[in-house]
Length: 109
Image: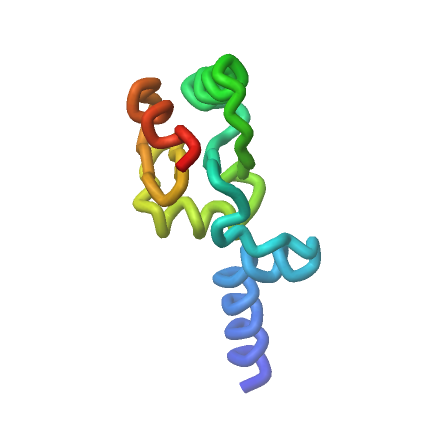
């Protein structure tokens, strides 16, 4: 019985590792932290293009790395994320790198 409980405990920790990591790191809740949010990774070249697009047009934004934060990954998944970048601008979600759509969505309301 002790072995079963130990295995169940280890399995439970494994299944909830992202939540446990956020608990100890004090990760913030991301629900709508700003007007324009970029969900990205460090290695994605289209994410880099999106950053440059924002810089070129003077668009302020908040960026979350979906590989480094479990909370950011959960938010990304809620938005239907299956690839990066994902931009949530004033409630309009843009999947992928589409400068026209991103700029249209990121205009201040």
